[in-house]
Length: 221
Ligand code: MP5
Image 1 (tube, rainbow, N blue to C red):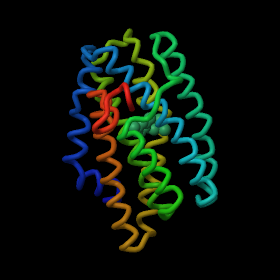
Image 2 (tube, protein in one colour):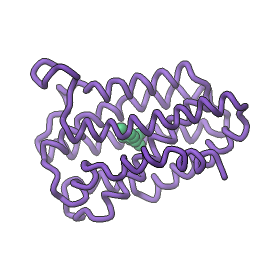
Image 3 (cartoon, protein in one colour):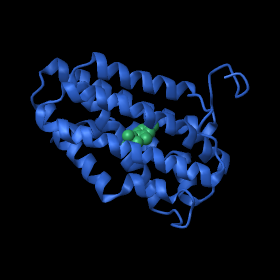
Image 4 (cartoon, rainbow, N blue to C red):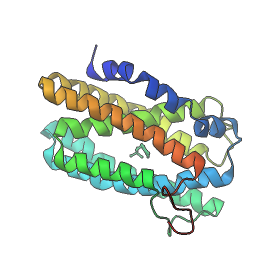
């Protein structure tokens, strides 16, 4: 069994919570409040913006054969940001004056900290888990959402064949990195695997509840 399969089995209780999150079920069933979906869009727009420097920081550290794939991910993310802007304009959602919520802020700091201070294989683990989480999560939504939904373009974005191929690629590469890692690095990779999965659950929770910062409300955060 490869590292990814082994870890997905190990953290399955977290993964199941993620896939059973009410944000995903309500988006699939078309019962999600527009304001709730808008709150996810606003926060995830900031997250995707931050994913660009995260990937960019990995490129100079990557083994040569991985550099091109990581480099090509950047224009894909730019296109994704364009999709957010287009959907936001269509639905009258402000993306400009948004500030990151606590969970989003913590997750982004975690991404950047791993990119700059963890080993390459550890940072690559975080990349894989974040992408795999979105693929699996949006597949849940795909299973029932009305294709005429205003939110369907997001489903298409993260369940496309191209995105599935990217996640498969990351999985193969991560399995190889783990196979070449020593025991203590593998343990740190496993820890980051789990932490990233937990951040993904926390992100859906933040979106579903509209949470901003603990102890503050939307007016002062
Ligand atoms: C992704 C995302 C997927 N957009 N947001 C969160 C909270 N997790 C994962 O990353 P990408 O770079 O948009 O494919």
